[in-house]
Length: 249
Image 1 (spheres, rainbow, N blue to C red):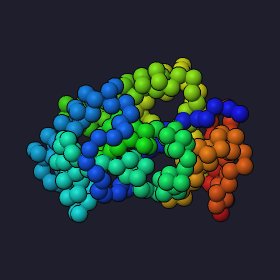
Image 2 (cartoon, helix red, strand yellow):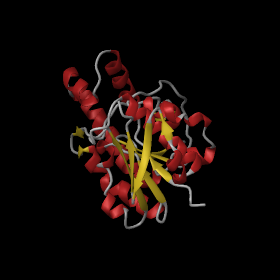
Image 3 (cartoon, one colour):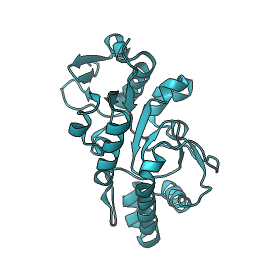
Image 4 (cartoon, rainbow, N blue to C red):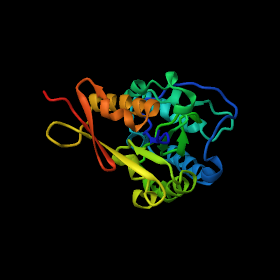
């Protein structure tokens, strides 16, 4: 049986509120401590100085969600900011279809999540509520995917050398890694979601099947893809790529 793979899975825009204060698991905190501080400081500066319409564009929300995002940002520098495990915080379509609560601890521990705020976390790490995209640029730091790129690539090359990484990231988050460098240390399997016309698939269905496929790989390994089916979606492998094909109309 092959070695169990690790999954690179994106965070979700949808996030559960709440959490508890105190310390807990925080993978990569030593390696990324200073970068995380820089991001929080830059984001806090923006919240303190930008007008509300510009903040709405920066954070990608408006109305009640904007008020929640602003308060969450204000709370971030506080030592007792409310946190919960990433797998509980993220509750969008991908994560709800993954159903991480019912995964074995070992399987859930193999989920790696790149994010604009933390850089890289495991699904079990405690994280705060936040609203920030990898595609955003912050004062002094520039585009966050570029800001994080070398640090995140180095961590994976050093700590996961010889491992298999399944890349389920959209372009926004994939930009935070140098995959050419990464592939010198790890086996990387890239996953593409395709519509019937051959173009990239998007929308609720593509997100749902991403969560279902992630679950199958975590539970049963890459061998599971040959029998994978979900609402008409199917998978084909060619070398180091998995093509997830949408159902025909």
